[in-house]
Length: 437
Picture (cartoon, rainbow, N blue to C red):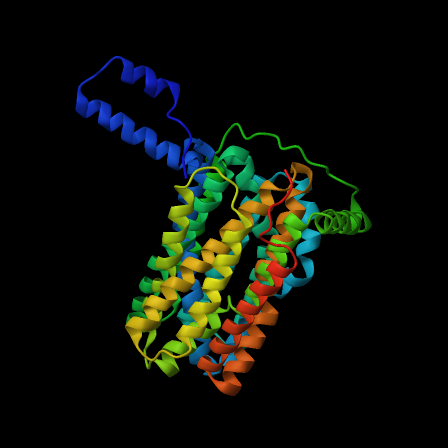
């Protein structure tokens, strides 16, 4: 896919015919900027760099929390319950968060939410370090983290369009996904080694410190554009009315509604990696914390590859057929993984799964934002947060219960078949057909 042309300054420099080595260097820089247009924006660079640091800490905490729950309970269902509680607020409150995101300055929202998440990580780290951690405490902290994330996720997603601009939005979303998945490679592997060596507490404490990078980047931003937004009516009734208006607006636009519906099914049935991968590592592959960490890193490697390819691909809006292909890849990877007992083969399939997952989620994210308008973007992204993370309680309980009853391979096979059925259903409803210009 062709990227944007080289900027006029580079063309003028080339006309002066400097030495060949200098010309090649400048052309190389121009190509990098053309491939990653969001990085031209200073504010986005600050945000992206902070996210890269903080997300590594987030992945360390995810692995540490899963392993801590297994140490405390030994139960896959208990692990699924933690994941369910962490996303439960998003299930019920995401739609109400959307009007708030459309109404208030997004940088201000993010400074508050990131600070609160740092305090929650610190609390869990102190509990784990002192040996005071109990299962019910993990449940409470997971629920509180979910409350904060309910506002943080749509605010963070919508903020990218403000700091990168509409023309660079696909690049910004893909680069953010690349940061997320680069962190997925580093974070779990480092956390697994730390857990094996000294326990789970450092995973939480390092995550708490990592939020300082995001907060510092947000405070260092300047000349933020004033987005066009409809503040809507105030108060509880006004917020509810604004949320319902946003739902009606999305429902009337199948080019937005159908990708969100497909993502909702895949999120519930397939994207339960924090539940299934530790059980797969422990029971099917007979691995410890280190092996679990490297399996999660393989998942992250595939995800990172997909994100970088998208970020380097230019500005074009994702085609709906690519969403269907990515969803089918997720189903196929799950089905093949259900038959594996080899670490190497499982790692390779998890890399494929990660590639397909990011290919779906980043494309849905970009598509629905580009097809939205400024006044509704916060509400659209709150709906995206609902179908991506808000269905997690259903998915986590489904995954934990089925794995508890029949084992990880049975869950993988059933969910893979369900994913393929969802692809067929979305195509039958019209996803993938050419939209009118």
